[in-house]
Length: 455
Image 1: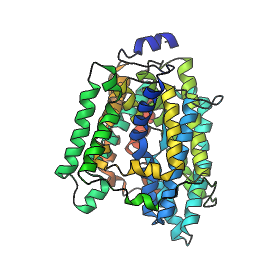
Image 2: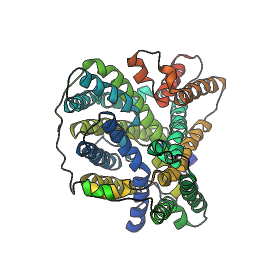
Image 3: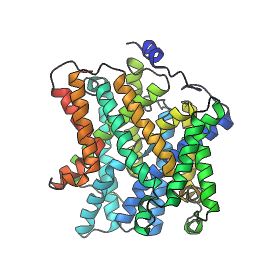
């Protein structure tokens, strides 16, 4: 299928602004803000969890969060405005990957357990990530060759798994988040009511026949939920006083180390992260009416995976954790009908500002988890739907159904019952702790070895 045919066949009828359109600045800013709000919690949660696991001082935790936002913004700019061959040129937002949290905590804990300081542990993590970040860069030139096994069937399964596994994150936030579990307010009527208000407003506005309600559905739902939470006394800005006004990026602030034994699991996870990004970029192409076959498609994939690697290595240098292309922004594209990469550029610049000025990010961080959960629940669901659309765009014969069934079963099984990997060696347990990694690996292997036509 050539580029033109693929694009024409899949062009969404309800797309308001396509990839290269330039919406009015005010409209672009509103939509970019929705993309930022959609990814904000996903970006700051990994460094927050890692900081808590390592019992870092509050100043170090705030610094890691700021650097995560900053590097995510730089990576997003690189994706939407390619530099040479690096960047997809799609509305792809970069963010901190959840997949690496468990291996990072394990590696840092091993360094501390061996007598190293927490700063040395972080330096070893960043050094290991810096070296392993070469994996997507090395993979990028061979994307077309790899497409023999990383077919639309595999990417469709991976995108579906991304959406379905992230739904648990959305529903947990809707019930009040992890902190609410400790406080005993998890799934309280107040939390569920806030989440339901946000979800209902987004659903109603996104189904409107008028453009503006649909375009503003996410930001309107979040703003309404934030306002109601504020009136109910559930928003506190007390922590803003402890934040510095400006976060100065200091390359290799914690030094640089390397633990060779950790390179294998980290390299494997970078490979899985690249496959996840391929799935996300395929979904973005589908939603914005761009081809999902042919030379232009593979050029975008090559540039996007290359940008993932460059962003991850930059993140390691700037004291942040591995970066990947986020999936939830495809949900925003589907809800708003705007897939312009110029909106993505603005979103990247906003993330950079949030990283450089911690109090600005602190205002967003003060938003109750239930408010964000109400929005992300819808967006993660739309990501799963995008994966299903990729799967249904091809003939699903018996071979494809077997691969999909096994991959989805294993991926969701690991997600629902994570302790099933407890008997594995720590190296393998870290590698397959993610449902996306487990299901994606299964899809890859079965698609490579099972007889029949690869679809």
